[in-house]
Length: 225
Image (cartoon, rainbow, N blue to C red):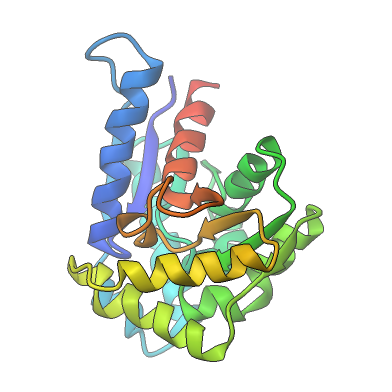
């Protein structure tokens, strides 16, 4: 079985959630006490977020992390966050190891569940930049994002609460999702790996796509070959 590499730290809260899902998924797939080999490179989130060269500098940090994981023997690598996938193609080209896209994994899971119209929640960058939405639209999905004020509030919840280990606005997120459910979306993408810390399947009336869990499962399955 191939060794998995995880670029984490963006944020540590979501990386911890990935590790918990790694344990849970492994217990469901393998015999007792068997866990795939996993190497985590946890980046300094402040240095990443405040990089003076913005996405060019962040891309270089991600490439350095991926190469470090390669040196540690990782053969299948994932970035444990949605927003950094804005530069995923460049990072993928810079390393020899196989990389698994969180967007592709989410799209495949949505296809399996027969979903068509998806609400995308995440950071402002994920909701406003075209990289995520267009990737899904190319695969045949209709993607809806919240309005401007709602995007600001979701972004604030992510960075001012969930990234700091706080949860004060769960009700707001539930009500926001239900609002769009009434408008016809049949699934919600928790397109920030902090959001599953707040929203679980069963909290809302539509399908919940937990991007972190879906991605971790895809990494393990790819490592299985």
